[in-house]
Image (cartoon, rainbow, N blue to C red; front, side):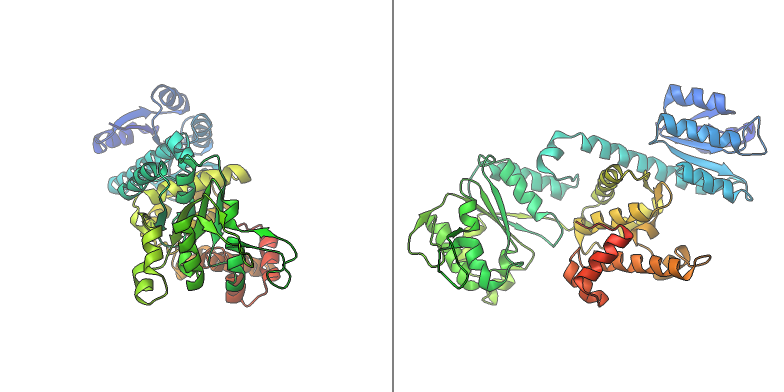
Length: 452
């Protein structure tokens, strides 16, 4: 049974909560001294704390003191502060100090029960995140996930890593296909060799063959010396071909020949060059549809898909969403020395309801944005950009701002929103905003924005 510490100088309220919250082991304290003693002895994960404690029952000094003491001893504790209807300023001050939530007297047991349930759920989630950060398996793979489909992915990685068979990784953009490829490589006998990634969709078609297979001196205008391609650089290691569905048909033929013979010819050369490299490919296209349309060769597909790993979209990963958000927040807050501690229940609900078209990459960017924009230790839905426009306007209203301040706030919000929609692609963001790429970079620098 979970322990709940109730701190209130009113014995009747303590008795009411002990009777009404029988699902918890309710501990009680009537002043700061008793509260800290009970907290040290039992270390409850959630505390309800009345602000008006003796000897300042009509003020908030003792309540705020208890709040600071508790959070100093255990920052992960979820403290729900209790205030009067006319003490909104006190409640906001408590939130700024790190309180999880607040509610006003008189006590509505149903409302309080819901707040406490979410506080315990969030505490459990954060504890799981802490365990995962210390998990050796998580560090090895660079991947996190507790849902059944991700656990199946981890099992497949372990099974295929020991062999040299080609692997095809399928999944939407932003699901972590390159991380899976690296995990297979790092767990294989080729781990001491190079891991060479090549995004087939990011290189112009007329340069792709040279990038992949290299070229000889004089092979084309500007070829002033012999250059090795990515295949050769991957010798004794792994070549990761991201977005292989974008590979032109002519190069599909040449890649198929390499997979069959383990030999290549540089562009402009006649010599067969043996290369021992494992191929891992990935794509977010519907391969069956591409083959039916003649855009992807059947024989190449069967060569690269000896083993297929399908990554689930983030929206289908359940509680992994909150877990990953917590990991990203911890990393970013630690690196940037931001005093953000976690997510509100409303933020967690909003993340569970969001469709995540950009998947894990979008989640990471939204969490970074939230850590930058948040002015309190707790992340709210508006910080993540996960509220309706009307709600966002109310939260980020322009009352009391100068014209310059309002313009800067809108400018920053628009850049962040468009960047997230374009999955961090600067060129597409510039097009959507009607700006040049240097102008977008200048805005990012101006507002202290960072996107991976």
